[in-house]
Length: 120
Image (cartoon, rainbow, N blue to C red):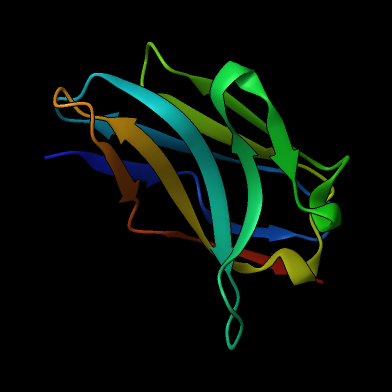
């Protein structure tokens, strides 16, 4: 069984910074994709940032220049450094990984979510 554990959420004032971390545990061959999503109250879950094979990164337009995603496949971790936070960044942030099992199947795994609250 593969599990993701997130940490680093909390409350911060507008303009501040937070760093989210996510670590995978369990038995699998390798990680093929890592990312962070968020869901604000009353809204759909949306992509924040992602890393695909070859370390290609992708960011939502709303966070470009403010957030940075970094991943370490060997350590099975992914982090999201968030700076210049705005009240509209308030949401539950979810870590997502796609891992390849030892039977070469793709397995999508989600973390439990961590709340980020940005006060004005």
